[in-house]
Image (tube, rainbow, N blue to C red; front, side):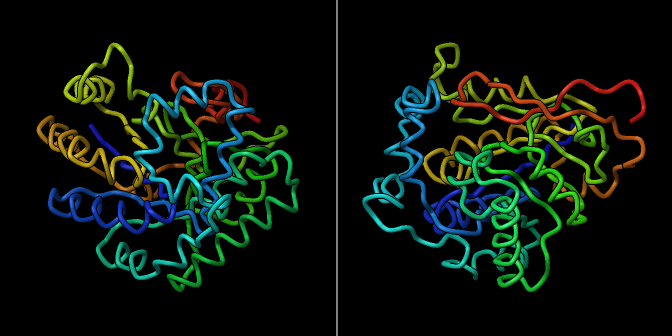
Length: 304
């Protein structure tokens, strides 16, 4: 059983507090992981408009106790309180991750703008978001990022084509079952897509059939597939803070089951691109998540 921990960092607080705690725990446990950092401003407060756009967003806020989890400063960031830069506020933390052997990739520039307005900003807007994000990464780490993970698992044809032209080792923009290559407008893209395969904690928190932390841990243990790459996305603001003890217990339980932890770049390096299945990227919804996400579509049987 292989497990790839994909750690998304969406906020100023997540990078300042959650990332160091996660990195320290993972080091103690001898576990590899990949961190994806939002490179631009923390405009988390503007996400409140999802109440009007995304059915189920308000119930998710209550179910996950979002205000207590994220804190008032983050909830108001970019609205009643000014935005704060995320990556450029803590370059030392990001450099420290790489020095300690963790993978570091790009998780967009303005997380809220990408997640809520990707289809509105057009091709130029997509290119600007990517350009700003990758430039901030280069300014901090002195080299280009070779990977990208889309905010909110949301992408479109413009983003897929722009990222493919960048010659990345891989992307992780969608939800799915196994690595594949995306088909866009009849064209098979070169960049492998490594999708998230497991539900996130905020999608399962508060479920009636998972009444306590032990039930949640056993739920994840039951989902992990042997002889497969299990990609588990966690968040610095959740598992890195209020849920750190529970996440540590899950990591230890996986180790007891004999799981091998790999970074996503390791999984990407051993992929044979020519042999990967080709799939269109579709839009769908998931239980426990408000709004649409991008997902791996059916495998195309005929060559493209």
